[in-house]
Structures are given as C-alpha cells and as structure tokens.
Image (cartoon, rainbow, N blue to C red; front, side):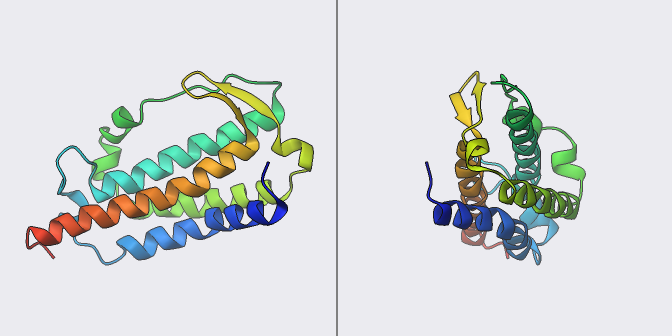
Length: 163
C-alpha cells in the first residue's frame, strides 16, 4: 500500500492533470489536433477525448468498488471508442471541461476515503484484481503518459515542417 504522502502526491497529479492538458493543447491549430503524425498512433484530439473517456470509466469504476462487494468491472475497447465521430468532430474543449469537473469530484472522493476504503477490491476481466488504490496509481500515471504521447505526436509534426 502507498504511504499517506504517496497518496497525496498521486491525488495531486489527478488534480493538476486537466490544467496540464489544457496548457499542452491550447494554442494548437486544427491541423495539429487532427493529423495522424505518427502512423498507427492517435491524433492529439483523439488523445484528449480518450483521456476523458478513460477517466470517466475509471471514476465510475472507483464508485463501483466503493459501493459494491467485489464487483466485476466492465472493460471497454478504447481503440473503438477513439474511432467514434465524437473523438474527431467534437471540440477538445468539451473533453477538457469534462475532465475539469470530473477530476474535482474524483479528488474530493479520493480525499474522503478511509484507510479501509483504499483496499476495496474488484475484478477486471483483463487485468485481474484491482483496488481503489490501484485505480489511483494507474490513473495518476495515465494522464502523464498521454501528455507524453501528445508531445511525441507534435514533435513528429514539427519534423514534417508543420507548425
């Protein structure tokens, strides 16, 4: 289990992520948002919308773990989600606004938990056993991974002389 300080740091990562994401994408052109600069990787817009999809699912999973006895968590196909029209046509600001509100609630929930609640278990059919704490660990890292992917995508675009 994480120490209290490690939990606080991870909760703070969840707290900061929407602002960090917004800064990373705020001045991008439509071309930068919508172009697949790295073959087989998502566009910047798809990354932004994916994080909203993923974190909404994770928030619900957190609530299920806290309110049900050892629930089985339903997986979803993130690649199919990323191919839906809303991952291409919806303005990224919608997902950023969603993430802001969602992360405020998620942080408030995490900060309210007792020691026993951090260990509340569930089962993910693809990943196996999970706990509330494992969700915190996974998703406090998840945003940073997508910020990195966005940076790599934009760097590839610059190499193609797109600004």
